[in-house]
Image (cartoon, rainbow, N blue to C red; front, side):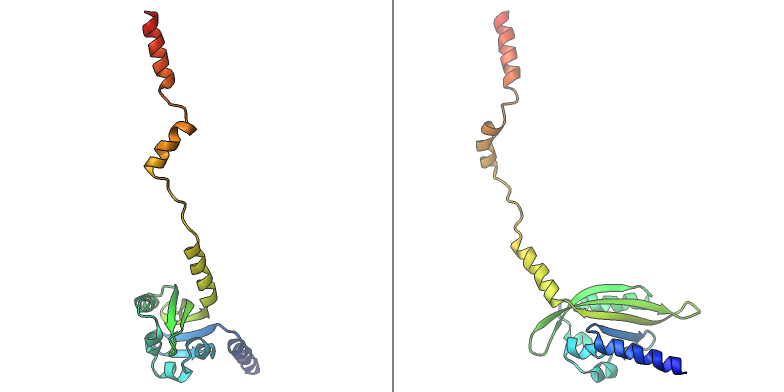
Length: 173
């Protein structure tokens, strides 16, 4: 029993000091069995609100991302791992990007029992990625007119040699 208490204390120490959110959700009831304190920092909502209503977090998800999050819950019910990125809109209008990894947990009989996962704040990385994409310009394709103007300068005329041979043979007849 002392080992169990010590193990639980080490887990709580980890969960309370890591910035990633950990969660453990019962599949049958849909209720959260555990949510780490990082939820409050990530979502700026209370743990109690999520324990009271497991789907209350959907309200904070950007409307364009809600369908993907709901689809991940369907995957959970099928016992499939989910890995997705979505936006959370805070009460002050600020948007945060979240990366959420979730894994099915099966009991000894092979039945799906719970889903466990982590959620990480990735806004800085996502903004850097989006900034890079917006500043990277695709190579510009030259127009046909530009190609036609430049063609004689860069390539010999492909049929010039053949035409010269034909003219020389005609002249020799």
